[in-house]
Amino acid sequence: MGATLQAMSDPSAPDWPTGPLKAYDSVTMAEFLREQGASRGAIEQLEFPFTTAEDDPTSFLWNLREFWYESQETTRYKISGGNDLLPKAFAAKLRDKIRYGSPVVRIEQDAAKVRAVAVQSGTHHTFDADRLISQFPFPCCAGWKCSHLFPKQNEKPSRN
Image (tube, rainbow, N blue to C red; front, top):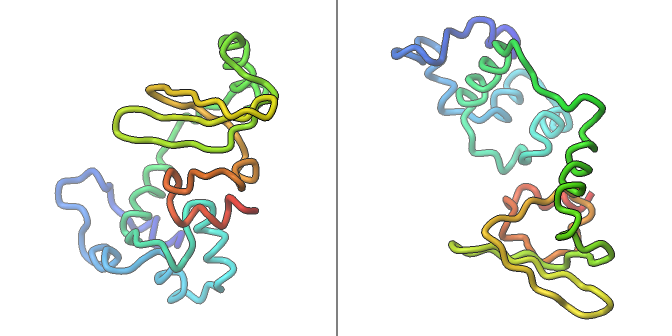
């Protein structure tokens, strides 16, 4: 894939894609990698956590464009001290609104609002909002009833 990426021209050019790159718009990344001799396991690792090799409809050309832009980045932003500082900062600012010891068991969303259902002292409580910000590892939501909120391809990673 490296040689293909190096041979690529700027995707923001008005005539892009040019030449042989056009053919990559009709194959998926998994198909391209298979043609290069990659094993199923290697392809799954490259596709994870976004999709599986069987479910990825995205063209290899789209992936190349994304890889090209990433290769041109000169700045990456990170949280000094670690990513755990972000939820800690939310907790500090929103401490009066956080319900500790109240696990979320369901998330619902429609065009107007989002709703979280939590259990507190054995009783279900419903919280409505315009938006919901959550920070959780997928295994935590394995028992939640919210599958419609996540793409189908994320079901497997969410169970692991």
